[in-house]
Image (tube, rainbow, N blue to C red; front, side, top):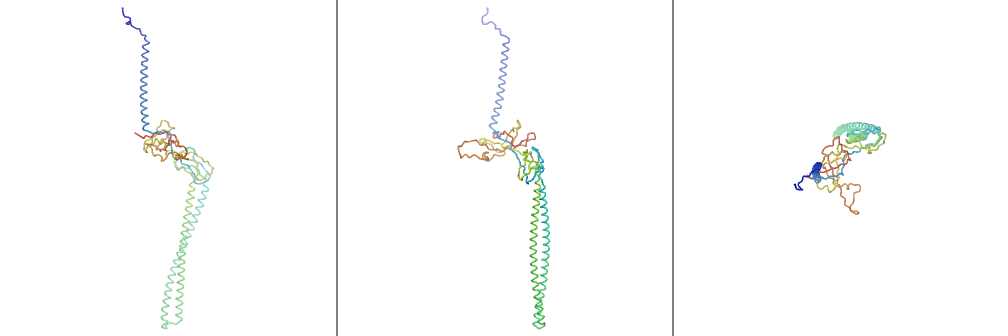
Length: 363
């Protein structure tokens, strides 16, 4: 006879299978939790390390050159050669202004220059004639001087002869008259020479004045041609035509904005970091940033410079903390970031795009 506790117990087969499945499920869940915990710890540590070595901001945007296109002369628009968002190169014609009035000014300046050149030629001829007359007058003076010297010599000789009685008083009188006449003629010739020399000076002054006037007329012609060249308004930089505000037949003033050209190549990023984030930030540090237009695409660059003042200082009405109640507000400072390499054609960066930037401030 066996003891009561020693009888075998029958366990249903389904109960063992259920317990086995529960155990397997627990193991699987535990494994998944362990893996998730490891992955979470890995990315958590990685994110913590990233946060400790980087300064981030989403208050950033792409900046670039947006050049206004302005005419240098006033007039009516003859043709508009581009459309909105069209790519252009530096120097490409964009707008043509009716050039007929400018052509007339060029013709007028050209005619004035030709008249001035004719006056200059006349002045040169007058100078040559004056110099020839002066040379003749100088030669006449030399001739008169020779005659005066001969007459004086004759007078001296006849005076000696008269004292000896070799000649009569009438002959001495004639010699004296001849000497006086040659002296008077010499004085007249010298006066004519001085007048001729003065005429040369006057002619030289006219030549200088005509040369100056010709130079002025030449400058006027160059200016008129330059103004004529401004009838064709060209692109100042390479980029995209933006905000076109001009149509054929429209009258435009000099300096009026007709359109803008936005650069695609020469762009950079301005990130506005809090003042508390600038403690370890320096030019030359590496930067990673993403643009909202291209999710998942990481661009790289370097800190170029840090602004010399906060953004609030450049506002139209800067805050004055010395008036009223003071409330401390964390200020932001613009930081300029240059791209490590130009953006590719599939991911162009246009001025104004929003950016999330992270600067590596520590290793």
